[in-house]
Length: 103
Image 1 (cartoon, rainbow, N blue to C red):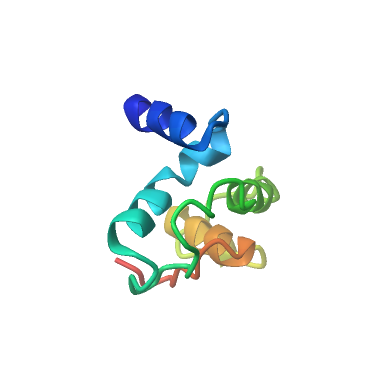
Image 2 (cartoon, rainbow, N blue to C red; image 1 turned 135 degrees about the vertical axis):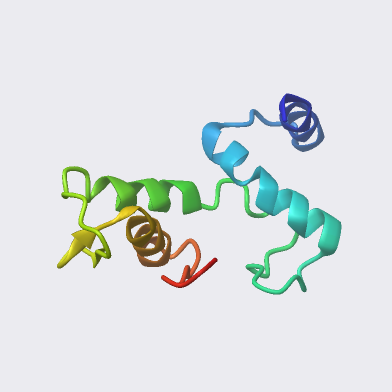
């Protein structure tokens, strides 16, 4: 991955930050398969960098620090189990609609 980050930095003539790195897989998929990938976000390759999705995800995730673990919990009202927490955070942040029954 370091080679990927170095190549991106060189190609884009800019520093690659943590948020850029978290979007690298999405950028790779868009660049390789185009914007018609099912479930894609419709952005042309490269535009995902710095789009704020990582920040939105982290902002939503940190809101629930300290909530107790509750088996089967999937919202702030019920608290969360591990998969319920992940699904809630991704969906509520707007990064990706992640169904509770996603495999």
